[in-house]
Image 1 (tube, protein in one colour):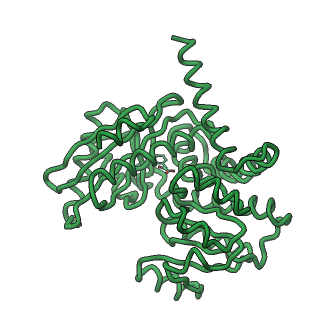
Image 2: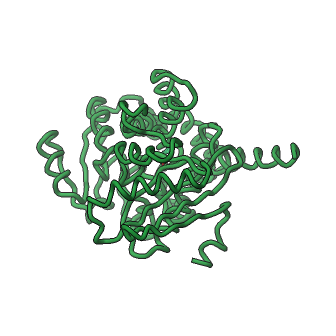
Length: 355
Ligand code: PPY
Protein backbone atom coordinates (compact mmCIF):
# COMPACT_ATOMS: atom_id res chain seq x y z
CA UNK A 1 0.00 0.00 0.00
CA UNK A 2 2.94 2.34 0.60
CA UNK A 3 3.99 2.31 -3.05
CA UNK A 4 0.38 2.67 -4.11
CA UNK A 5 -0.09 5.86 -2.09
CA UNK A 6 3.37 7.21 -2.95
CA UNK A 7 2.83 6.87 -6.67
CA UNK A 8 -0.66 8.40 -6.69
CA UNK A 9 -1.14 11.99 -7.83
CA UNK A 10 -4.26 12.49 -5.70
CA UNK A 11 -4.56 14.49 -2.49
CA UNK A 12 -5.28 12.02 0.29
CA UNK A 13 -6.62 8.67 1.34
CA UNK A 14 -8.49 8.03 4.56
CA UNK A 15 -9.11 4.58 5.97
CA UNK A 16 -10.88 2.88 8.80
CA UNK A 17 -11.46 -0.74 9.71
CA UNK A 18 -15.01 -1.53 10.80
CA UNK A 19 -14.38 -4.29 13.32
CA UNK A 20 -18.03 -5.24 13.80
CA UNK A 21 -18.47 -6.30 10.19
CA UNK A 22 -14.82 -6.92 9.18
CA UNK A 23 -15.02 -4.19 6.52
CA UNK A 24 -12.12 -2.04 5.31
CA UNK A 25 -13.47 1.42 4.51
CA UNK A 26 -11.43 3.67 2.21
CA UNK A 27 -12.05 7.19 1.00
CA UNK A 28 -9.81 8.44 -1.80
CA UNK A 29 -9.74 12.17 -2.43
CA UNK A 30 -8.15 12.88 -5.78
CA UNK A 31 -8.65 16.61 -6.23
CA UNK A 32 -10.52 19.40 -4.45
CA UNK A 33 -9.38 22.05 -6.96
CA UNK A 34 -12.92 22.49 -8.29
CA UNK A 35 -14.85 21.86 -5.06
CA UNK A 36 -15.69 19.39 -2.29
CA UNK A 37 -14.68 15.83 -3.15
CA UNK A 38 -17.88 14.10 -4.25
CA UNK A 39 -18.44 10.59 -5.53
CA UNK A 40 -20.22 7.35 -4.91
CA UNK A 41 -19.67 4.70 -2.27
CA UNK A 42 -18.94 1.29 -3.73
CA UNK A 43 -19.60 -1.86 -1.73
CA UNK A 44 -17.81 -4.98 -2.85
CA UNK A 45 -15.61 -7.81 -1.65
CA UNK A 46 -12.05 -7.43 -3.01
CA UNK A 47 -9.24 -10.03 -2.89
CA UNK A 48 -7.17 -7.73 -0.63
CA UNK A 49 -7.58 -4.29 1.03
CA UNK A 50 -4.92 -3.05 -1.37
CA UNK A 51 -7.15 -3.89 -4.35
CA UNK A 52 -9.98 -1.98 -2.69
CA UNK A 53 -7.83 1.08 -2.08
CA UNK A 54 -6.49 0.95 -5.65
CA UNK A 55 -10.05 0.86 -6.99
CA UNK A 56 -11.05 3.83 -4.81
CA UNK A 57 -8.05 5.83 -6.07
CA UNK A 58 -8.75 5.16 -9.74
CA UNK A 59 -12.45 5.87 -9.33
CA UNK A 60 -11.71 9.11 -7.46
CA UNK A 61 -9.51 10.29 -10.32
CA UNK A 62 -12.35 9.51 -12.73
CA UNK A 63 -14.66 11.68 -10.62
CA UNK A 64 -12.25 14.63 -10.83
CA UNK A 65 -12.47 14.49 -14.63
CA UNK A 66 -16.21 13.80 -14.57
CA UNK A 67 -16.94 16.99 -12.61
CA UNK A 68 -14.44 18.97 -14.69
CA UNK A 69 -15.98 17.64 -17.89
CA UNK A 70 -19.46 18.90 -16.93
CA UNK A 71 -18.10 22.07 -15.28
CA UNK A 72 -19.77 21.44 -11.92
CA UNK A 73 -18.07 22.93 -8.82
CA UNK A 74 -17.17 19.57 -7.30
CA UNK A 75 -13.96 17.65 -6.67
CA UNK A 76 -13.02 14.05 -7.30
CA UNK A 77 -13.44 11.44 -4.59
CA UNK A 78 -14.76 7.95 -4.11
CA UNK A 79 -15.28 5.55 -1.22
CA UNK A 80 -15.01 1.81 -1.17
CA UNK A 81 -16.43 -0.48 1.51
CA UNK A 82 -14.49 -3.71 1.14
CA UNK A 83 -16.77 -6.20 2.84
CA UNK A 84 -15.45 -9.61 3.85
CA UNK A 85 -16.44 -12.71 1.88
CA UNK A 86 -18.60 -13.84 4.77
CA UNK A 87 -20.43 -10.51 5.13
CA UNK A 88 -23.96 -11.20 6.28
CA UNK A 89 -26.82 -9.03 4.94
CA UNK A 90 -27.97 -8.48 8.54
CA UNK A 91 -24.74 -6.48 9.10
CA UNK A 92 -25.59 -3.99 6.40
CA UNK A 93 -27.71 -1.58 8.39
CA UNK A 94 -25.09 -1.26 11.14
CA UNK A 95 -22.25 -0.85 8.66
CA UNK A 96 -24.03 1.91 6.74
CA UNK A 97 -24.96 3.79 9.92
CA UNK A 98 -21.38 3.62 11.23
CA UNK A 99 -20.02 4.69 7.85
CA UNK A 100 -22.37 7.70 7.90
CA UNK A 101 -21.20 8.60 11.38
CA UNK A 102 -17.58 8.37 10.23
CA UNK A 103 -18.29 10.75 7.32
CA UNK A 104 -19.85 13.20 9.77
CA UNK A 105 -16.80 12.89 12.06
CA UNK A 106 -14.64 13.79 9.06
CA UNK A 107 -16.51 17.10 8.84
CA UNK A 108 -17.94 16.58 5.36
CA UNK A 109 -14.51 16.40 3.68
CA UNK A 110 -16.25 14.00 1.28
CA UNK A 111 -19.85 13.89 0.04
CA UNK A 112 -21.29 10.72 -1.38
CA UNK A 113 -24.04 8.87 -3.19
CA UNK A 114 -24.82 5.43 -4.61
CA UNK A 115 -22.41 3.38 -6.71
CA UNK A 116 -21.91 -0.26 -7.67
CA UNK A 117 -23.21 -2.42 -4.79
CA UNK A 118 -25.08 0.36 -2.96
CA UNK A 119 -28.64 1.60 -3.37
CA UNK A 120 -30.90 4.47 -2.36
CA UNK A 121 -31.89 2.62 0.81
CA UNK A 122 -28.21 2.44 1.83
CA UNK A 123 -28.01 6.21 1.32
CA UNK A 124 -30.95 6.61 3.71
CA UNK A 125 -29.01 4.61 6.33
CA UNK A 126 -25.87 6.75 5.84
CA UNK A 127 -28.05 9.83 6.18
CA UNK A 128 -28.89 8.92 9.78
CA UNK A 129 -25.47 10.22 10.75
CA UNK A 130 -24.56 12.50 7.86
CA UNK A 131 -26.54 14.67 5.48
CA UNK A 132 -23.91 15.12 2.73
CA UNK A 133 -25.41 12.22 0.87
CA UNK A 134 -27.11 12.21 -2.52
CA UNK A 135 -29.58 9.76 -4.01
CA UNK A 136 -31.70 9.00 -0.94
CA UNK A 137 -35.21 7.70 -1.66
CA UNK A 138 -37.86 10.33 -2.45
CA UNK A 139 -39.52 9.99 0.97
CA UNK A 140 -36.15 10.80 2.57
CA UNK A 141 -35.88 14.00 0.58
CA UNK A 142 -33.58 12.59 -2.11
CA UNK A 143 -34.06 12.03 -5.83
CA UNK A 144 -33.67 8.24 -5.70
CA UNK A 145 -31.82 5.95 -8.11
CA UNK A 146 -29.73 7.92 -10.65
CA UNK A 147 -29.31 4.84 -12.92
CA UNK A 148 -31.96 5.86 -15.50
CA UNK A 149 -30.30 9.28 -15.85
CA UNK A 150 -26.87 7.77 -16.33
CA UNK A 151 -28.51 5.58 -18.99
CA UNK A 152 -30.03 8.65 -20.68
CA UNK A 153 -26.58 10.24 -20.98
CA UNK A 154 -25.06 7.00 -22.26
CA UNK A 155 -27.83 6.74 -24.84
CA UNK A 156 -27.20 10.29 -25.99
CA UNK A 157 -23.48 9.45 -26.21
CA UNK A 158 -24.10 6.27 -28.20
CA UNK A 159 -26.26 8.23 -30.61
CA UNK A 160 -23.59 10.90 -31.05
CA UNK A 161 -20.92 8.23 -31.56
CA UNK A 162 -23.05 6.45 -34.20
CA UNK A 163 -23.66 9.76 -35.94
CA UNK A 164 -19.92 10.37 -36.00
CA UNK A 165 -19.01 6.89 -37.22
CA UNK A 166 -21.93 6.01 -39.51
CA UNK A 167 -23.00 9.51 -40.55
CA UNK A 168 -26.60 8.91 -39.58
CA UNK A 169 -28.78 9.90 -36.63
CA UNK A 170 -31.03 6.96 -37.32
CA UNK A 171 -30.12 4.01 -35.07
CA UNK A 172 -32.65 1.57 -36.52
CA UNK A 173 -31.16 -1.89 -36.93
CA UNK A 174 -27.80 -1.08 -35.35
CA UNK A 175 -26.53 -3.95 -33.26
CA UNK A 176 -25.62 -3.03 -29.69
CA UNK A 177 -24.12 -5.35 -27.10
CA UNK A 178 -24.76 -4.26 -23.52
CA UNK A 179 -22.46 -5.78 -20.90
CA UNK A 180 -24.18 -5.72 -17.50
CA UNK A 181 -27.91 -5.28 -16.98
CA UNK A 182 -27.88 -3.50 -13.62
CA UNK A 183 -29.15 -0.07 -12.66
CA UNK A 184 -27.67 1.54 -15.82
CA UNK A 185 -27.62 -1.33 -18.35
CA UNK A 186 -31.29 -2.17 -17.91
CA UNK A 187 -32.76 1.31 -18.55
CA UNK A 188 -30.23 1.77 -21.37
CA UNK A 189 -31.59 -1.34 -23.09
CA UNK A 190 -35.09 0.15 -22.99
CA UNK A 191 -33.90 3.37 -24.65
CA UNK A 192 -32.02 1.43 -27.33
CA UNK A 193 -35.02 -0.76 -28.11
CA UNK A 194 -37.23 2.32 -28.41
CA UNK A 195 -34.75 3.71 -30.96
CA UNK A 196 -35.04 0.54 -33.02
CA UNK A 197 -31.67 -1.03 -32.21
CA UNK A 198 -30.99 -4.76 -32.17
CA UNK A 199 -29.86 -5.35 -28.59
CA UNK A 200 -27.87 -8.28 -27.20
CA UNK A 201 -26.75 -8.51 -23.60
CA UNK A 202 -24.43 -10.24 -21.20
CA UNK A 203 -24.28 -10.50 -17.41
CA UNK A 204 -22.80 -12.75 -14.72
CA UNK A 205 -25.88 -13.01 -12.51
CA UNK A 206 -28.22 -15.85 -13.49
CA UNK A 207 -31.32 -14.27 -11.93
CA UNK A 208 -30.79 -11.06 -13.89
CA UNK A 209 -30.08 -13.00 -17.08
CA UNK A 210 -33.31 -14.98 -16.80
CA UNK A 211 -35.30 -11.83 -16.11
CA UNK A 212 -34.03 -9.93 -19.17
CA UNK A 213 -34.45 -13.01 -21.37
CA UNK A 214 -38.03 -13.53 -20.25
CA UNK A 215 -39.14 -9.89 -20.08
CA UNK A 216 -37.52 -8.63 -23.26
CA UNK A 217 -36.68 -11.78 -25.21
CA UNK A 218 -33.16 -10.51 -26.00
CA UNK A 219 -30.34 -12.80 -27.02
CA UNK A 220 -27.76 -13.51 -24.37
CA UNK A 221 -24.01 -13.56 -24.99
CA UNK A 222 -21.90 -15.73 -22.67
CA UNK A 223 -19.53 -13.59 -20.57
CA UNK A 224 -16.44 -15.31 -22.05
CA UNK A 225 -17.64 -14.55 -25.59
CA UNK A 226 -18.47 -10.85 -25.08
CA UNK A 227 -15.27 -9.31 -26.44
CA UNK A 228 -15.20 -11.31 -29.67
CA UNK A 229 -18.93 -10.89 -30.36
CA UNK A 230 -19.56 -8.97 -33.62
CA UNK A 231 -21.66 -5.81 -33.09
CA UNK A 232 -21.76 -2.13 -34.11
CA UNK A 233 -21.53 -0.79 -30.57
CA UNK A 234 -20.13 -2.48 -27.50
CA UNK A 235 -21.58 -0.83 -24.36
CA UNK A 236 -19.76 -1.85 -21.15
CA UNK A 237 -22.10 -1.14 -18.20
CA UNK A 238 -20.57 -3.38 -15.53
CA UNK A 239 -17.15 -3.29 -13.87
CA UNK A 240 -13.99 -1.47 -14.95
CA UNK A 241 -10.68 -2.52 -16.48
CA UNK A 242 -12.36 -4.55 -19.22
CA UNK A 243 -10.58 -2.76 -22.09
CA UNK A 244 -7.04 -4.11 -21.97
CA UNK A 245 -4.25 -5.82 -23.93
CA UNK A 246 -6.15 -9.10 -23.82
CA UNK A 247 -9.62 -7.89 -24.85
CA UNK A 248 -8.94 -5.04 -27.30
CA UNK A 249 -7.43 -7.30 -30.02
CA UNK A 250 -10.60 -9.46 -29.86
CA UNK A 251 -13.12 -6.63 -30.37
CA UNK A 252 -15.33 -6.83 -33.46
CA UNK A 253 -17.19 -3.54 -33.00
CA UNK A 254 -16.87 -0.04 -34.50
CA UNK A 255 -17.65 1.83 -31.30
CA UNK A 256 -17.14 1.31 -27.56
CA UNK A 257 -19.58 3.49 -25.62
CA UNK A 258 -21.02 2.46 -22.27
CA UNK A 259 -21.75 3.48 -18.70
CA UNK A 260 -19.10 1.67 -16.64
CA UNK A 261 -16.45 3.65 -14.77
CA UNK A 262 -12.73 3.14 -15.52
CA UNK A 263 -13.28 1.02 -18.63
CA UNK A 264 -9.64 1.28 -19.71
CA UNK A 265 -7.22 -0.85 -17.72
CA UNK A 266 -4.43 1.64 -18.40
CA UNK A 267 -4.00 4.86 -20.38
CA UNK A 268 -2.20 2.95 -23.15
CA UNK A 269 -5.46 1.13 -23.84
CA UNK A 270 -7.10 4.31 -25.12
CA UNK A 271 -4.31 4.50 -27.69
CA UNK A 272 -4.75 0.80 -28.53
CA UNK A 273 -8.44 1.38 -29.37
CA UNK A 274 -7.47 4.38 -31.48
CA UNK A 275 -4.91 2.28 -33.36
CA UNK A 276 -7.59 -0.30 -34.10
CA UNK A 277 -9.82 2.52 -35.40
CA UNK A 278 -12.48 1.80 -32.78
CA UNK A 279 -14.29 4.96 -31.70
CA UNK A 280 -14.15 5.12 -27.89
CA UNK A 281 -16.45 7.35 -25.81
CA UNK A 282 -14.34 8.33 -22.74
CA UNK A 283 -16.16 6.83 -19.76
CA UNK A 284 -16.21 9.81 -17.43
CA UNK A 285 -17.76 11.94 -20.18
CA UNK A 286 -20.45 9.54 -21.37
CA UNK A 287 -21.44 8.25 -17.91
CA UNK A 288 -21.78 11.62 -16.15
CA UNK A 289 -25.60 11.62 -16.34
CA UNK A 290 -26.23 10.20 -12.87
CA UNK A 291 -23.78 12.61 -11.27
CA UNK A 292 -25.30 15.56 -13.16
CA UNK A 293 -28.79 14.49 -12.11
CA UNK A 294 -28.14 14.02 -8.40
CA UNK A 295 -25.97 17.05 -7.77
CA UNK A 296 -27.93 19.49 -9.96
CA UNK A 297 -31.37 18.57 -8.60
CA UNK A 298 -30.36 18.03 -4.97
CA UNK A 299 -27.88 20.84 -4.44
CA UNK A 300 -28.07 23.33 -7.33
CA UNK A 301 -31.82 23.94 -7.43
CA UNK A 302 -32.37 22.57 -10.95
CA UNK A 303 -35.64 20.92 -11.89
CA UNK A 304 -35.67 17.51 -13.56
CA UNK A 305 -36.31 18.90 -17.02
CA UNK A 306 -33.24 21.18 -16.85
CA UNK A 307 -31.15 18.24 -15.62
CA UNK A 308 -32.40 16.04 -18.47
CA UNK A 309 -31.49 18.70 -21.05
CA UNK A 310 -27.99 18.97 -19.59
CA UNK A 311 -27.61 15.18 -19.63
CA UNK A 312 -28.65 14.95 -23.29
CA UNK A 313 -25.91 17.57 -24.00
CA UNK A 314 -23.36 14.82 -23.23
CA UNK A 315 -23.76 13.75 -26.86
CA UNK A 316 -22.59 17.17 -28.05
CA UNK A 317 -19.63 17.17 -25.65
CA UNK A 318 -18.57 13.85 -27.15
CA UNK A 319 -18.90 15.18 -30.68
CA UNK A 320 -16.61 18.09 -29.73
CA UNK A 321 -14.09 15.65 -28.26
CA UNK A 322 -14.15 13.45 -31.38
CA UNK A 323 -13.68 16.50 -33.62
CA UNK A 324 -10.79 17.77 -31.49
CA UNK A 325 -9.17 14.32 -31.51
CA UNK A 326 -9.38 14.08 -35.29
CA UNK A 327 -8.06 17.58 -35.83
CA UNK A 328 -4.98 16.90 -33.74
CA UNK A 329 -4.49 13.27 -34.73
CA UNK A 330 -4.89 12.05 -31.16
CA UNK A 331 -7.14 9.47 -29.49
CA UNK A 332 -10.49 10.47 -27.97
CA UNK A 333 -9.03 9.42 -24.61
CA UNK A 334 -6.26 11.97 -24.96
CA UNK A 335 -8.63 14.66 -26.21
CA UNK A 336 -10.95 14.19 -23.21
CA UNK A 337 -8.01 14.24 -20.81
CA UNK A 338 -6.76 17.48 -22.31
CA UNK A 339 -10.18 19.05 -21.76
CA UNK A 340 -10.73 17.78 -18.21
CA UNK A 341 -7.14 18.13 -16.94
CA UNK A 342 -6.95 21.58 -18.50
CA UNK A 343 -9.92 22.74 -16.43
CA UNK A 344 -8.48 21.31 -13.21
CA UNK A 345 -5.10 22.90 -13.89
CA UNK A 346 -6.76 26.23 -14.58
CA UNK A 347 -8.59 26.03 -11.21
CA UNK A 348 -5.37 25.16 -9.37
CA UNK A 349 -3.54 28.11 -10.95
CA UNK A 350 -6.43 30.43 -10.11
CA UNK A 351 -6.35 29.27 -6.48
CA UNK A 352 -2.60 29.94 -6.29
CA UNK A 353 -2.89 33.44 -7.69
CA UNK A 354 -5.77 34.24 -5.32
CA UNK A 355 -3.81 33.09 -2.25
C1 PPY B 1 -20.38 8.41 -10.49
O1 PPY B 1 -20.84 9.01 -11.45
O2 PPY B 1 -19.54 7.51 -10.64
C2 PPY B 1 -20.79 8.79 -9.15
O3 PPY B 1 -20.12 8.48 -8.23
C3 PPY B 1 -22.07 9.56 -9.05
C4 PPY B 1 -22.30 10.38 -7.84
C5 PPY B 1 -22.78 11.63 -7.96
C6 PPY B 1 -23.03 12.40 -6.88
C7 PPY B 1 -22.79 11.94 -5.64
C8 PPY B 1 -22.28 10.69 -5.52
C9 PPY B 1 -22.07 9.90 -6.60
